[in-house]
Amino acid sequence: MPPRLNPLDHSFALTLLVAVLSAVLLCSCASVPPEPHAVAQPDAAPAELPADIRLAGAQAWPAQRWWASYGDAQLDALVDRALQASPSLAAAAARVEAARSALVVSRAAAGAEAGVSADANRQHYSANGLLPPPIGGASFNEFSVKLQARYDFDLWGRNRAQVAAAAGEAFAREAEQVQVREKVGGAVARSYFELQSLWALAANLREQAAAQQLLVDDKARRIVHGLASADEARVEQARLAELRARIAEAEAGAVGQREALRALLGHGDDAIATLQPRPLPTGQAMLPQRLGYELLARRPDLQAARWRVEASMSRVEAARAAFYPDVNLAASVGLDSLTLPNLLKTASRTFFAGPSLALPLFTTGALKGQLGGARSARDELIADYDHRVLDAVRDVAQAAAALQGLAAQASQQHEATVLTQAQQRSSEARLRQGLADRAATVQAGLAVLRERQAGLQLDRQRLQTEVALTQALGGGFHAEASTQISRN
Image (spheres, rainbow, N blue to C red):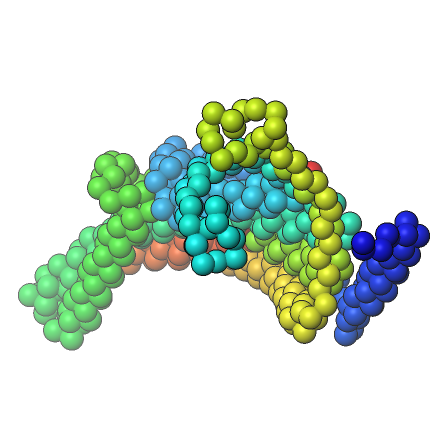
């Protein structure tokens, strides 16, 4: 007769098991490598402009639909069409949905899991195997239905950290989608303003060419009467040829910008064919009095970089939690029978419930490598974020300084235009009094046209720089309005 087991033996065995598990737990918890250096934090302090960079316009941030401030219905329609047809924006939207789906998966994995399974199989047992006859050498059916559930207690926050990392990536993708939207709007505005500028320049050059043709004709008449030389005529003809070459250059550039707009709107868009020349708009640039933390909330690229830093920190926490034991509770209830008619009977019931403990005893090297990689990725993203902040301030400062310079040039150019116009009026008055010839008046008119051309070139640069400044300031984006995914 076998010896009877003493209940105290069970108590002793249980105590010994708990002690062993506790020792293993403590050993496993003590193996997390420390941070090799102090963790850097994202730095927002440099987000300020020098005191000498100021604009004459309103001290404000751009509006969300900043292009509408130019009051050009053609531009508004083009931007709206481009935002609807942009493949880049469609791809960005798809990346957002993928990140949201990954977040849903991560949240689902962090909670309780439950499922139902049903099986039906037939198995033949070997007559020479472990089980003797009558089981050996016979075939049996088996039918089962089970409801299974599992719950991860997440004692060390690994699942929560993984959810936070997925949420950070989703937020970053949303910010990138806004960034793509701003790039598309900016590209349309730049191409449209360049097209209008080239049309205006071509029209101005055609006026100059018409006036230059008058000078060529005048020289031809003077040669006939012996009042001018052939060399003088060739000088005027060369100037006319140069103007015609510049007209051709401007017209070719306009065609190129038109096709750039067509590509942004989708090939074959009829809106391009109906575009008409418009006067170049006046300055609409705005620069806030201070940047500070507001710039970080206004720039979608900085928001994307910040969320990636947050996600990387969560990944580090998840990698740290992987060093600790994983405790789960699993249970299943169901029915199991060798015959289908007996499956639903009470005697066919099955039940299982119990905890499970997983300890990372022999994977420390891999876990240390994963943690080190997560920390390095975090440090890289923090450095990248700081670099992006500096670049953002540089972009704003350079665009604002360029607009300052263009404003000073425009002031001087306006004064030059006023003087040449006064000279033209004086020449026309002398012509009426018979004190000057027609050629002198034409030359005075050409001087005015050249100054207007210089003004058009300044307006051309100003519009491009205004768009650059608007985008450097975030293009109307604000982080508080962009976050749509709950972090819970």
